[in-house]
Amino acid sequence: MTFSIRFDDRNVPSAPGQTVAAALWAAGERSWRTTRDRGAPRGLFCGIGVCFDCIVTIDGVPNQRACLVPTRPGMVVRTQPGVGH
Ligand code: FES
Image (cartoon, rainbow, N blue to C red; front, top):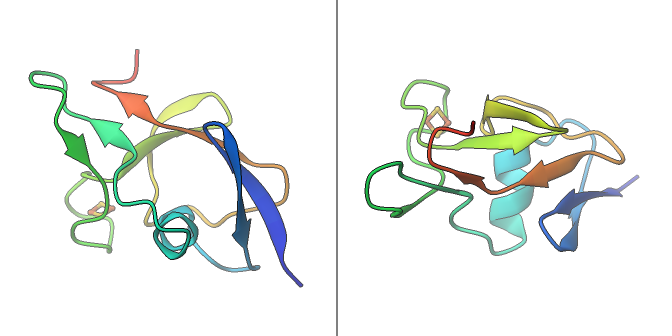
């Protein structure tokens, strides 16, 4: 059974057990944060929770690693600019 999560201004399909990063990647998204100094786009890199390149704001909480957090119905994911304050 699939469901949707919200990513910025659109719905993204997901399946139970899928991580946020996997759902975004499958939907064609390649970046979901920007660096604090230059605003360069970042997204999935290591995929195993080590590099923190994939941090994103989930349900209003910044600095969540998208490669580790499983999706759930109704989740709201936002692109995180800089350090997420
Ligand atoms: S991609 Fe490296 S911590 Fe998520």
